[in-house]
Image 1 (cartoon, one colour):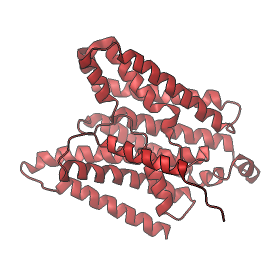
Image 2 (cartoon, one colour):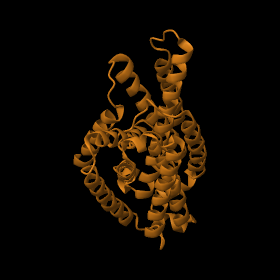
Image 3 (cartoon, one colour):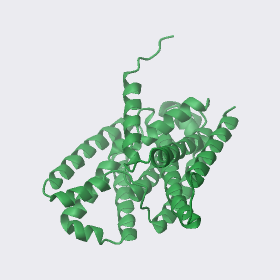
Length: 315
């Protein structure tokens, strides 16, 4: 049953991609298809990365309401953008080589995440709650510092920071996209190799250890994959925190299984489908040029509130 539903999800993504590429296609068709394919690839890369990372993080945290963004990825990204604009000015920021900026941002995000994970979990991976709370506090601190720095900017520079604070898919560099795709493929392969171990890890440390699972090593490996996926997608297009919550929740609802070998690709496909269909409706049907991530964040925020306020069922 789960395999058939997974295949159906894949077919939906293929049809959504075909609509995105060929809907209302006009001359010069080759040039337009090239632009659309680049944007489609960016949507799929980000959707797959965020969907996969969220399932991994929720399994390790044993909580389906959390996303990797809660440990401060988006706040650190905005803080980096604000700091660069403050130091270099708007013209200097615009003159930065895009590939170098992408590489530095990815490395900083990965290094910060791995440092946080390593310091807080050095004595064992049984204190995920402390990791989450520390990440929340660091995120609040970084947002406060970024907000203070933004008050020192002139209006044009502030507008540059605001634009960089939301995920945008309209101007993705092809070289960056190729690098991000390579990181995604390797990270997804690593996640799938961890799938069976994550099935045991989801039972909790106390249950997994007697079954022979090296729980601490699995947790660190999964968090490293999360760091790579989220850092790369964030550096590529910007932060889009609640997409993962949507993808993960729908994957658990659609796929009646606890096996990560099915949940991981399911969430990845759903994440990509949400972005592709959302961009198609937003751009092709409605003719709007606003930021898709705003709508995704709004829908994800509503889902988060629903999950928080929903009363548990009593059998």
